[in-house]
Image (tube, rainbow, N blue to C red; front, side, top):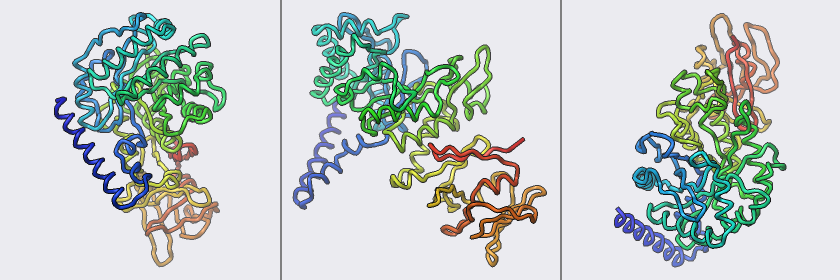
Length: 472
């Protein structure tokens, strides 16, 4: 196994050297050489990171969708007060994970720490180790040896949490660990808190020094566990990203953490979906004995889009809690990234998602039915035929008079291209945006037409999402 990987790395180095020589011979600028470097391209890739708490779950590694992830963070590596490391409980599982992930092109890190170990908070252990030069050096040496032994790509510091008295030693640990990792070509990340304000984060986040932030390849922002009813709402994702942007962290280094569990029930997303398939699309379930507040597919999709616009990736805690069917969160993220892969940054800002009765209505270019967009008047324009046929309406188009007729039950709606009006059973209603023809498809302002058929609409501007719901 190691010989094969060594050969592959040699081949990669030869390919890169050949390209650099070609660039030099053709007279291109050094910037072009940097652009084509494979590692640089991967570094700028939108990250899809999954925590894998192998010691807490019995899910087999083979079920993990590493082909749809860029990183896996294996949890947890436990520090001890003398600078040594607790033995891994499932070393063979980690080796299997690394082999599978690397074969799929995903990196594997290991998380150092966590909240507690064997019922004891780890914060005092971190404080003890980090306060001693000798213990820090031994801990760092042991971490580097373990990364080499398991062919890992990096480590994440999950010290929850340094305080006013320990932040200086936290910084020493970060700086010294980063220096040691650089020698081996390994990477360093950290799990940091979310924020309920774009400027006023929690005290532990305020303490985080610029030196630390500059030392991390990226940060995983734990935008969850705020409280039970407000466990991880959409607005918390936004303020958490913006807080770290305001701290000067580059967008591409901010990874939005998203939970796959509920509070206060602590039920897993996969178990909620198994109880009732509709739960996969909701954010609340009246479960017993404790109710469940969580993130369903639609909210997680909106968060992913927000991260695509404003950050560098998403992190799921924990991917063992995902499903392996049509409700899979990892698959949903993969699909969204695939549909938007060719969009420019400006086009991405105008990309629109449509959710009809809690199910995403996916528009694909290859279908030839049009794709939703936001026009120059900042109005959301949706292709007419697909959403209306999805609610059981009959759609026809009179080319000569440029009139679209939509019929469902006893309601007939007529839309004339270029007019700011529609007719509902013959009665004229003035609207603020006209229907248009674009690329041979009719686009309409949704609200007026769907309202005529008994549907309500909600617009989430931060995620460019239209929610259409039938009124009972």
